[in-house]
Image 1 (cartoon, one colour):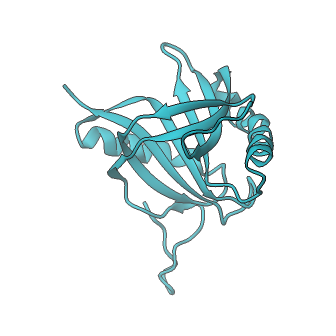
Image 2 (cartoon, rainbow, N blue to C red; image 1 turned 30 degrees about the vertical axis):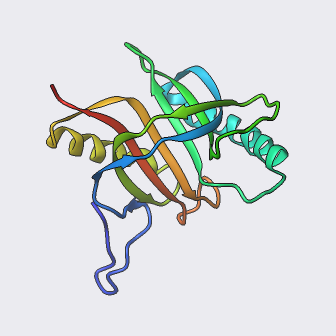
Length: 172
């Protein structure tokens, strides 16, 4: 739930600033690096290890420091509290450069999404809100969480804006 200052009506950082909603995300090409078999408690450390490497690779290939929003994906591994962690960027198709990164065509899909304002440590707090919304609307969660880091100063900045998504499917 969104928190607002009672006098000004302005949203307060460290909170959700949008209502959860269902959205169709069009397909795109994903340029990323990954680590597999990561324990849940180590997921954020994994993101920290991968992020500078994918930035370096993107800057090397595109010769610009103007990068698109960073996409972090957490893929649940079946029957465990472990993940595959992917960190990368949406790119145009047709990249023909040698790279250590992987490129995957992400299909168009329906997601439940919510926008969070605050430190990167506040983002996981939105997961319960999003999961509850999914169940209340008769959908099932799939194995994929996405975090689009739209604006990031650093892990501890209260100015960060993140679009959290969970891929879903209709209950049968």
